[in-house]
Length: 281
Image 1: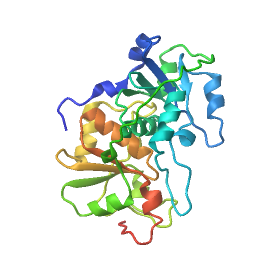
Image 2: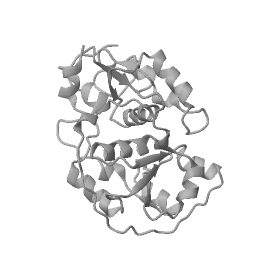
Image 3: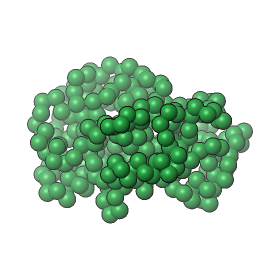
Image 4: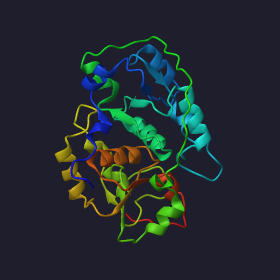
């Protein structure tokens, strides 16, 4: 962990308002709705210049028989989706949503796995933008096609065999980003309840200022992590139900300067459904 962190990963509405119109800047709206109305939500009002991507359709592999969770799409699909959105080599990017930054973080992490390091997340999402009386548009902004060259960094993404191999290792720490009740096995949707042995719990929802979608200040975030014994010097692996809150936690850790953080892609949705894997409660 560095001492200063990477605060530049977190864009404020003040900063973004000053950057609107920059020729190299792209703005990505990843608001999503289970009923499929994400594009309609975008069309009704968005940050000027933004384009919309359905992250569930574009950045996730189609479900395969016998698997659970949300698995990251392959490099060709990611490159196609980004290229159509005008995001390519040499562009900068701000991502936002309206869901605690969870979907924005999943998109940020997905791009980072394939070598895109020029993305920020808008702190507080579009709700903070509106609260700060920034402009909203319902205009369409056709993106000029771009070329994105994937350069995979698979150290950022772990699978079930990878996580199983780390169990008991003094050099790695599993961090469960779910709510405390899920971590303790009091509730959940998988075949088994509980958590991966050795994991500590840092509920990602508690990392935000109550009543807002903004992150708490860095000192408060560091205090939360230290109380859970998430310290420097070990490899950190985050997980949740399906890799969304886990990506948000990985983003927070990156902002704070943790430099060896991976996401367990598949998460508890996969681990909890496997009867051959150990579980603690």
